[in-house]
Length: 224
Image (cartoon, rainbow, N blue to C red; front, side, top):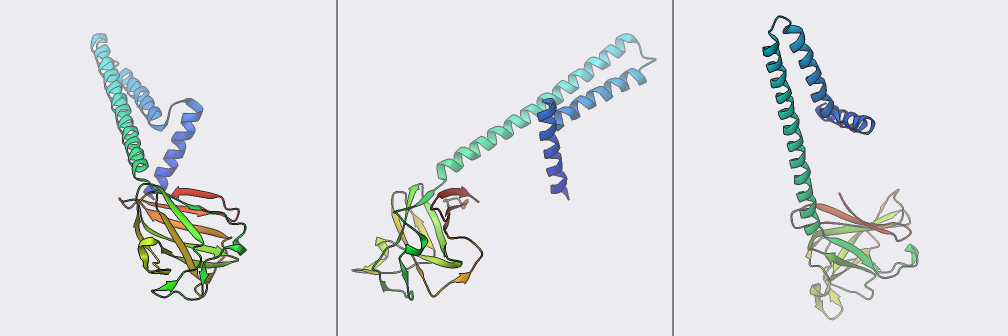
């Protein structure tokens, strides 16, 4: 209920800002000032002029302090958000797939069955960490209404020549390194999603991100 009312208040505040250049809180202070001024004049009818002027000056001062406090609060909030945004940028990893794919039907790298060790003849999907450390990397590929979970490997998982260990979740990867991914064609589930390649990952503080590549092989890296 409180979240709903807060959202309504925020929408009203934005609408007022567009129409009048003053937001909800500015109008609140302005209305409070007018109501207080009317109250001073009405209830101070029998008050001496000098005293009434003093009260009005004090009311002006109180409103000015209130407005200053409000503006200081919002400046601190803006500064806090800017610092959070700068910190996010400094930690945010970006993972993109490299290489050329003509169509989803031509994607190779699927294998009959994944075991702990398997000879890999084709490293079909290659992902590069372009910025910052990425951890808890996992994903899937959707091909013709079927969703296949990806399994990852790199040179460090090579046990012998052309013999690798596959991991459903990759612990962490430094920027500049390539991570390979394959999938088991026998493990799949039907889905209404269109053809796509999806990778989710986190930064070192646990903030979540993902890279999605659509049916036209257009990639986007976004924050959850």
